[in-house]
Length: 116
Image (cartoon, rainbow, N blue to C red):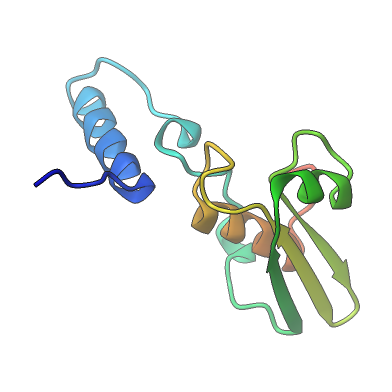
């Protein structure tokens, strides 16, 4: 019986391979190489205290709503509420979960320029 490989399995396999290469000193690892979107500093990685909505929609709509041809997600922050828009899993080199954490960081005050 042939098993179907899921994107999660692929990320796990890439992570293991890169970990081995790092351990033997053959390469340095970036978050992008293992499918993780750039992550906010720890002070922005907590539960959002206001009203949070997360909407997944087709990539072409995300690009329009987020106003960027490169966007795979974005966050709109208002007083006491944050709306996250994301494209589905498989539409980005980054996992859905890592993109969600990334956008949640923006809801919690992480700057759009990804600074400290």
